[in-house]
Image 1: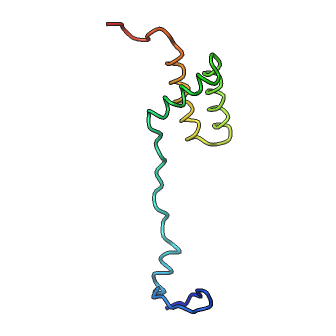
Image 2: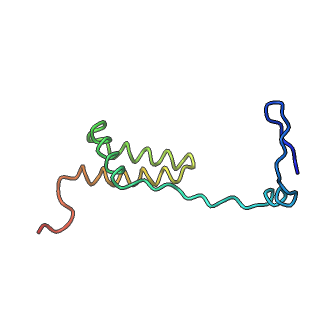
Image 3: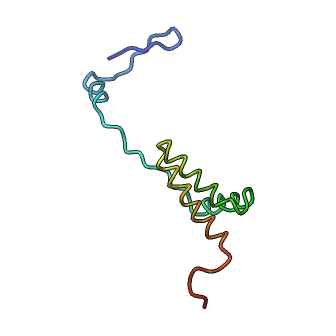
Length: 99
């Protein structure tokens, strides 16, 4: 048993020695990256178009490049998705077949 001090009072808590040693060598839990919902990508693209107008594709691509340079690969990937959405919204002609 080990003791901890809480507000001047010693309290004992049952932490077996073997369990404490096991915690030292435990593997950190898997961390999953949060996924940005598609609706938020399109919202960000609309905001970029409202703020930067015709320069929105260039500005969003520059943000992706800056994040990649800083080592933030997840942020850069998100901004590449936003850049794609900006380009699609800025393009007035359809890219596929018109029915």
